[in-house]
Image 1: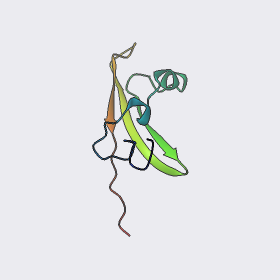
Image 2: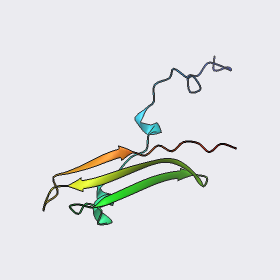
Image 3: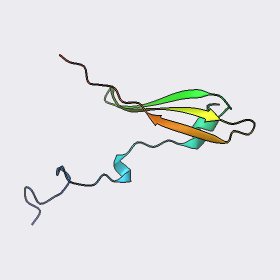
Length: 80
């Protein structure tokens, strides 16, 4: 029990959990003044100086803003 291969963390068919995903904190966006109507912004996540994800957003509507639209930013890996 508990030997090599007994866990599922390495399996390709394993479902992603919310703990493994990046998060967007609306309180942070508000604190940084990013929720103003018409405002565009981008967020980037990194680990060990490598970018692990990024997302862009735009705030739509008038005062107060009506919605924030988020869009995944996907970059192609550089070829060596």
